[in-house]
Image (cartoon, rainbow, N blue to C red):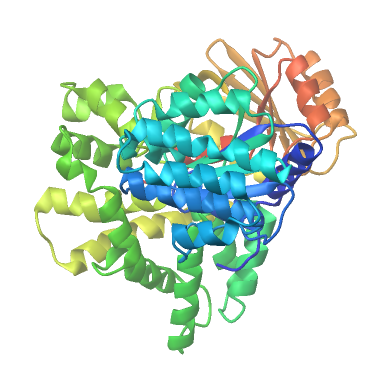
Length: 534
């Protein structure tokens, strides 16, 4: 993927946090998002610097032996002291780094030697603690603060280091000169660890979740990459709506679309056939690398205690079963709660209130097409897989074409019309989305052209919504609040639905007025629940 940052707001936020740390204010950070969402990419400008103030210790974690990890950790500490940020794969041996650092960092080198000599003899937790305690020695010797980045920090559990997070948490609280930045692809588990073991006094972590990309940046990047493909604007918009939270998936589809456009003399306009071929090559064909990725990602079904049962439930969720009641009706309630919890803990399913979704669009597509076909009819030929994949993608493409001809407010009306009395979590709040029998659109007086009001009626429910195409300021909130006061009966729920986001003051004003705010991530959740064709 090119070096274009498709999350400029997150980039700017990280820059402000690092600048504040350099000025004496520390706010530890945790970047959480699924594999391929771009966590390491966001940290790359920091990791790639050859000389920084403060120092940067970067250490990615893998499934490996504890001794090998601690050796790499010690190398990363020495490299930071020498003014070089490690990528995690430096070819120099630890002894070579020790020799190079000895003249300039004698105290740090002495501590590293003591730890290294005892790695084979000490228990893993003791070795881990002594390795961590080299860092304050380096900070004092260099007279500089330090940034410690642990990429995929949850692997500390898999290294056999007892109480690793407890020991790390003690350092988080007592090292004011060290900024901790953690990343993880295990969304559910990492939130639990941060909440229960690392959210401590004087060491709180700000959790930054990598959700949907910035639409304007992502679409502009795709248009640039697909400049030689006919119908580039349509492809860019469609791919963003489908895969907009996963830069890796977007890169794979953009690359293959480019290749097929060069190979095909018939590709004159965007058509379903070009999309079908791209998806088949990547996701449907047995040798497609997204197909291989899905198989690796779901290999745990074969080895888990509830393997067959968990796969069955997962496929039914992909097929559109959204609640435990619906799943129980389809497959029975035996062990349902336990298996669902296992799926959630492994990030194969997310719970949105009482609704269940597969958050990864590629895994969802693969489960619906390839995995479902295999389970229903045993081994089938590629032609049958391909037909089912094309049917799925045809539904997505047709739906996108239909939505692209409607205004944003019309799209929102369609989503609201599909509500089914589910309890869903949106805007960090959980509430019931009633089945409306009437939804009316109204144009507010003296309003901007990008603003529309909705009045939705259900049994004993009266909702008012402000649908905002453009940026939302305080004036828009006050106009909407004035509109709600004119309604009879008074609205039981007030919502601002913003396509482009709210400024902080407008969000605060909405909160004080008891107005819910649905932004891009909330709309993405609603599309997953009520806008996907099955």
